[in-house]
Image (cartoon, rainbow, N blue to C red; front, side, top):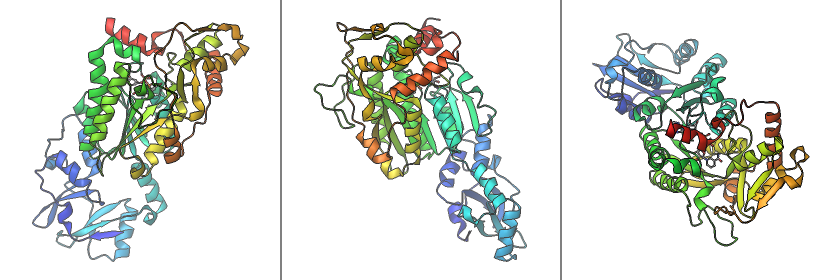
Amino acid sequence: MKILKNLSQITVSKNIPISKAVRKISFHESGVLLILKKRKIIGYLQEGDIKRALLKNNYSHETKIEKIMNKKPFTIKSNLSLKDKIKKLKINLRFRAPIVDEKNRIQGLLYFTNFTQLSDKQNYHFKTKLRKKIFIVGGAGYIGSVLSRLLLKLNYSIVIYDIFKFGISPVKDLMKNSNVKIIKGDASDTKKIVNTALGSEAVIDLSGIVGDPACDLNPTKTIVDNYINSKMLAEISKLLKIPRYIFMSSCSVYGLAKGKKKLNEKSKLNPLSLYAECKIKAEKDILKIKDKNFCPTILRLATVFGYSPRQRFDLVVNIFTLFATTGKKIHVFGGEQYRPNIHVSDVAKAIKLVLKAPIKNVNGEIFNVGDNRLNLKIKDIALIVSKLNKLSKKKVIIDKSSKDPRDYHVDFSKIKKTLKFTANTNIFKGAKELNAKIKQKKFRNINKVLFNNFSIESKNLYN
Ligand SMILES: NC(=O)c1ccc[n+]([C@@H]2O[C@H](COP(=O)([O-])OP(=O)(O)OC[C@H]3O[C@@H](n4cnc5c(N)ncnc54)[C@H](O)[C@@H]3O)[C@@H](O)[C@H]2O)c1
């Protein structure tokens, strides 16, 4: 509990724009601004007032705070004892209040500095009110729809911001959860992003065109969606004083590696596609703007596999699983190339660890996300998956003449050491779970374009 007597740090003019108020409010632990006239309070502004105003369409960052301030704030009389003042805050479920004398002149600001000082009822009220908000761009996708559910379990409140390329159904059941806000919007819509991301603890960027073939279909759109949007999202996050920004990159930035040495975060990059090139450019520009108040972290994901409410069947383990489950042959092109793998729920776990890590451990850092035990040759992945349904080995066809140029053996020691991350799900377990979902007929019309990123991009391009 604190009484602030020197109010100059939190006193502002009624004519300042919301954008300035946002910056000022985040500099003081009380989380409030006062507007005074002849020592009397004519306005009172909390973070929540700003958020509510920005969510209404008729207010913008240029709006003067006079239009949104609370003109009749709750106050406490200075003649009460400290004990009674605190009691009054608690009874009224307030976290803070200005103290005024008998003539309503401001004397100070009383506020709690520590939640242990709150009553149970107050605690519940504030804990639910002050859940940390995580803004997930691309939150309805393959990884996003798994991550969203994990963050809700961890008591975060989330905003799923997405253009819903694959529809809203992967997150539709979350709509009734009061801790979820679902917003349809494009990552390039800066105004919408500013208005909806304000007050977040972190922005997680999972958006863009995903995968080499899908990106090659429309290079200009790929550069905008995968590079410019991500760089801009990071810049907006910094401007809004959002402390953390997590960007999803890919191990494909390593491309073809010469020699057998495992690639770590400091290894030379060798992009073989526009997808990988855009990831590298975005990584560099995002890391450039880090400072002690803005903590960007880059996650270079291994190839993801496993079941998600937004299923993909264009990823190596998932395609092989689909073939194995439906009794088809598994064709392997080349087979000797190494590919690192990671289960989709382990990606969500890695993101959680970054969110919870001390800033000093993740600020400006790049992590390969995977597990050394899951670095496998493609032909070995096919053989593991072929054990599902006791598929005959004869059904794994290895075409040695064809060779995929992407071959990388990645080192995941840094994430293990810094964040204590190891994968919970191996390939067989993940494939088995997906195999069961296919058998349960979880996916209607499994050959639909919705399950394949290349197909959806070509449909959008040619329709
Ligand atoms: N899945 C993998 O194997 C893998 C591997 C490495 C990196 N990654 C990266 O992880 C991230 C998520 O991948 P995913 O597999 O979940 O892909 P996904 O295609 O399933 O999800 C992307 C989501 O972003 C949304 N989106 C796309 N463009 C948008 C835009 N302009 N504005 C708002 N929303 C937009 C889509 O509607 C979709 O819901 C991507 O950045 C991807 O490059 C994925």
